[in-house]
Image (cartoon, rainbow, N blue to C red; front, side, top):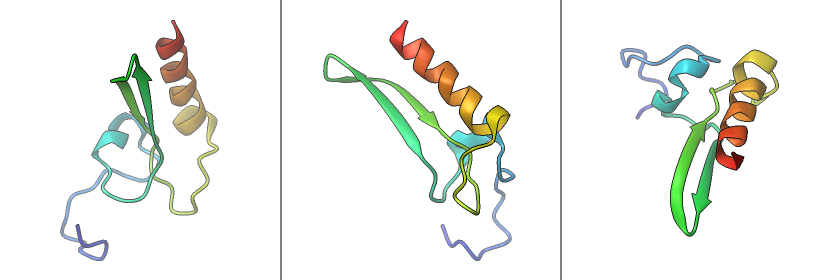
Length: 70
């Protein structure tokens, strides 16, 4: 996707609910169990590359990790 194409529909920055739809650079955490992919979590994009907002970045990631370790 062309990052300068403003006609393309994109989720808003820091939109945790739609982070899986982001097309640009953002962290993706994958969990493997017995060599098989068991879960994937996309952190919301952030233009400054600061993934430190509690309700947008930290809490959703903590929930994902807890589910993987349960």
